[in-house]
Length: 362
Image 1 (cartoon, rainbow, N blue to C red):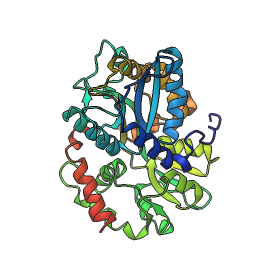
Image 2: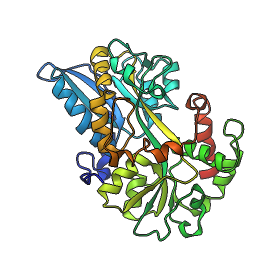
Image 3: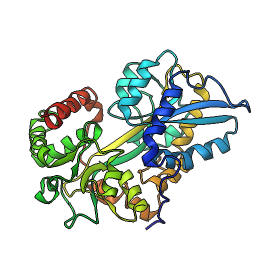
């Protein structure tokens, strides 16, 4: 097992909300990369996920990139989720507030269609050729930068019987102690998993999964844990939850094993984050250089060893102990539930709305 990661520092989770508000409000007033620093460097503004993701990405990708490219400075703007990125880019399409942005693969095609993102120049992002096929964009837009998977999380101090199945969310032992932040991609992925368990086809009818989730409502303590689900499990505010494996593994180390992520026996759903060139960026060349570095083998290995995502670059070999805790492990690869995220794009909002209205608000 790799050495324990340090407890969060620069973006400690308890301060992440304030940091998010400060960073986003300040960046929204001027176009991305509109000025450099006192040394004349170009500034690339990057929108990425807050908290542990920001800490690990800054340490293993941004800092080494800036060292290798002293003429470019990367400013990190933390965001909560892909919906927030989409909203901010829509509101600033003429003078965008970012040059590069992360976005879930289920949402990114919408941004591509609305021309919020621009196709990348393969000649300037040569590492695209070194990506696994599932990480490449068929239309030439931003490629995948991380692979992750949905998991169950539990507090090892409070839970006597560890969950092993999605069905265990309905166990009487956990009633009133569930945290279910599912009004986003986590809920969409959970619907797909439940459809498999129920013998249904998510591409034909999600009523079985929605009806199943409705019966869970009385056992849920919170649908929106604050500041996030991982902290809620660590503190004992909730005992069992759904979340992403990578962050769960990170918190497993930082909490000294209090937080435990579980791959349910029925399998799980792969989640893909893409890294995208924002249309109308004032520093397209520098932005694409940054994208190329982020998907390169060196950055991918460093980031994934730190943050437990699975690499998108086929040249990366993770440490064996790390690989076993990621979506790249043999166990997770055998237990992946196939999802057509391209198909999902046009249904994503409707699914989330149904979760909000019928499950959470029902």
